[in-house]
Length: 345
Image 1 (cartoon, rainbow, N blue to C red):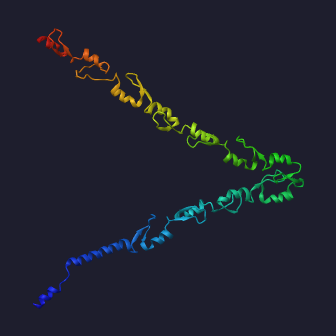
Image 2: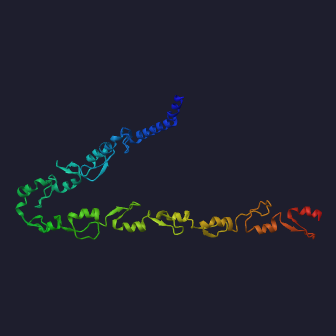
Image 3: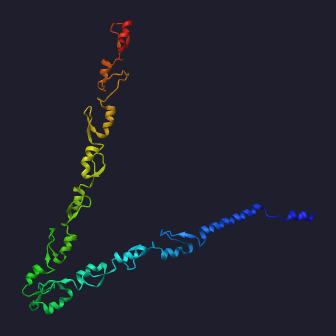
């Protein structure tokens, strides 16, 4: 009996309690494996194709991923993916170093044209004494002018802009040879106070009389006339139809107004009445006096009936029209039954 009461007091926990605890443990384990475990495997979110442990992901994105974005190490300001940085530094960066076009000096790519024009010791220059030597390198200019130039003994004066000129030729130099002499634009833009040194740049990039292609129709026009051309003359400018308000190219406006505009003028093919295109269908379906019509009492006639001829048909031609007996009996009957009526009248 004592053993019986002891077994009633000390009992095992219900099975439901044990199973709930086990299920909660499994859920926590799955959440840990999916979201918290540093050893779980993740794919790089920059889509480089690599899979790695979650603990290594931030380091990978910051330092190793070939698709991470970097600023150019040559400080040109460009931003690119790490995988194309080497190609950028070799072929595209304006701060990369290249050999000069005419010498072996290493210069930045962005300064190469300036180097070739003003700094390269191998560039071709003119003798400032006015001697017509060809192919004089800048590195040899001073030696040539001080000890080799055949005109060095006659050098006496400077032109107003600092060029070294033979004493006997200052006027010729000022008018024909000085790089700083004042000239006019050859394109005809009426500018008269250009330096000869700046004229080519002005004519190529700044002159209003230079020609360029219209960005819409590709016609060659003067730059100072481009705005007027694009607003008034360009066949590819957008214009509005005065009838329906639809926007179309200027070159297509005439065709639109004749063939597509809902408010273009048209004539009814039956009655020749003039109206807009948008009204024509309604007119032909409901209003035209010469539109086709059927007999309202379905007489089955093969005549081509129109609205304006329908009253005449109903009065004189329709076999089902009602007529009064011509013999004076006073009865009305359909005309097609006249013979039958006459037999019984």
